[in-house]
Length: 612
Image (cartoon, rainbow, N blue to C red; front, side, top):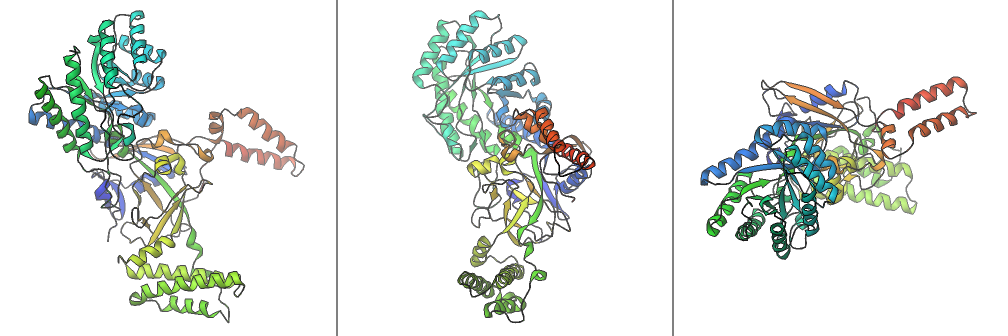
């Protein structure tokens, strides 16, 4: 029986399972595990981040086509536009593919800082939109004017009246071309989900109704009202409930109409911000959104058209940011399992005595005689016996060898019972598996590669890349290689019941894939324990279905990491060399050998190395 790990829920037809392997759902159907082995055969070790540009293209196409269809169905008068918020993923391996694939759609970029605006000025085609959000100083506003003078279609979104005053002042000093001006509105409406607090009247950004009125007056007084072309709102990064969006659209649509009646006749666009959700859940009953892209697009154009007709105003151009929707699916993190901690619990490790304590003998009998009809009963007995043995050990009635034998036998009974019970869903079995989890040590850092899991417990789909034609039997708790107890994804029988295979990784490799990691995870990743961005590779799929592995970029070396933290790497090398040279414990030949070893270590990445 094929195990799909909820692929039908979160996979969006991007991947399929064939011959027990996760494959790209393209013409040639390459298996991800085969791509990984190809890259590893070139000497790369540690975790890998695989980028799939064809999935970026798929998301762009689906976004634009859904809104085109929605507009065509009701003869909507406004245009549809999209900008990608660079804060979601600024890595060149993503951004360069995005701008190339988005060019036919006039796809633009959104910047929230000076560095991001510079990227937008370089990579956005002239005429495609650039929007600038977030708090701005005079220098950032000046850069926005320069972008306009270069010929860019740029809109600077005002977060506060002081920024508007800076724009007014700058406009008097600069040349004739001027950027468009947007006003961010502070809605009473709030979103839903983990990031809902970014909307509402107490949100961090935006102008109140009173400030909006004052802003329009200032624009008129300074003869800049003609450049006021957009209002912007944002109610959350991952909107789980469609009704939250519809409520916000009603409020924003009415504000749009009122501002136009106040004389803002060039106001023609509403920017919905981000929030178009993707599905992260692997399990039915825990879905992250209650709508489809088609419903999202239909509701946006329907609500805005209704308000426009009611208020007798033109239907606004629609802008969306939707960075998570575009980028999340394009990247897959792949990491090898280094160890299963209960591998020590094997029959070969038993060291039974000629005369064993009665409870140990009973455990051995349970292990040898267990069968399907007795599996649950023997499970309960095994757990009870192990508890009793541990108590007797604390009291000094059994020795360490007896305790070791009891732990091995109890774990062997659990494994055997799970195998015998097959796919039976006994509540007792789930409870026991929650208590006795297999701990998988995986060669990656949660803090670096899945920071949203560490920070806000955002789950990501996890599955093995192979052995999917075999039944996984072990309740899995994933441990990363950091020396931090928070670096763990625990087994959760109710929300996240992940089961993996019983594999001897000394004899065969076992790789896990972490999916939908292309949004925020790379840019939020921390250098905890000085683990850095993993080695990345881009997998390009041609029209005939063939694939090409390109742009392999190895993880930073240890020296690079230290240099990033402003250590003097020349000083570090010199001090290491000096201390080895001064060592009286080794001779001159050995000193040269040690220096050579250290040179190799310093110029390699910090992830663990395995032969397989």
